[in-house]
Length: 372
Image (cartoon, rainbow, N blue to C red; front, side, top):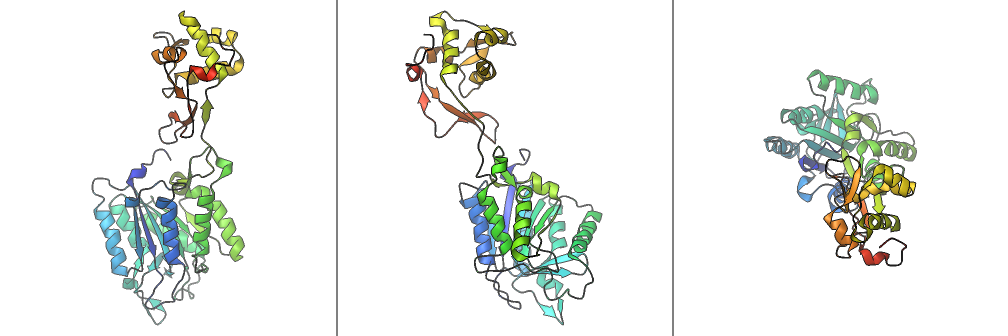
């Protein structure tokens, strides 16, 4: 995940409720708004900026194509590496190897969809490939619609054919997570689609089993979504392709994340005072530290060298000999304060002050038994 530049991600969320020639859907308007809240509005989950998110409601086929084309053309100079494309609305299977996003003006003639009145999945994929954009596609839509009932093909085979056709054209960098197979109905509700509901729910809930993981991917959320949607609908099963990309791509903050942290306590204070020795400065090798202090101190003293504290350092030319820094000396003199608790920043992997910590100095340990 750390290899993906989140600054180069765009999100295109499309919700189609008001169809001219198809059944009205209640959920999409809420689906796209809930996704926007999750990905850019909520400080507890959002890792993307508002200018990275585009919301489109009830577009015609030409309007949706224009938006996709604009994103592709504007990507000159590597402005976008990944495009999260979310679609909530009606969808139809096209033949045995393609799928159509139904837009406001999608039309049918004698049971067949008119291809020029929708946006094809394959056209979207090929357009992204021209600009080297990797699409992450999330679809909350029915796949059977009214036009593919005569096709003797299962939803599993449809995705197999789609993937094979796209791969045959040399395109492999895309990921897909859908609410159902082409023969299954995605349940629509006034508050939003069932699939989208659980996508948002589990993203907001976080994952306590991965509390050391600051960001969650769609791959992390996928198993929970599949189980819950299948259980709730008694059979509708979300489908995914290219799960390696789903796993690699960071989607939201993990609200159950507990960052690695350390606190400056009496034992570390005693160690500094030992090095200070009332101004008669000492240096200590790792072996001397092991002999003079408890095992816990031996495993923790290196944290004093972290820049966020910066109280000790290795003697130049010596691999395992520790001495006080200028800041460490000033701390022992009562002239310097430091953050009591530090946490590991998940972006830089460096330690930073815990936002909720207090500053401490020598006087904070006036009642301890440390040497002075």
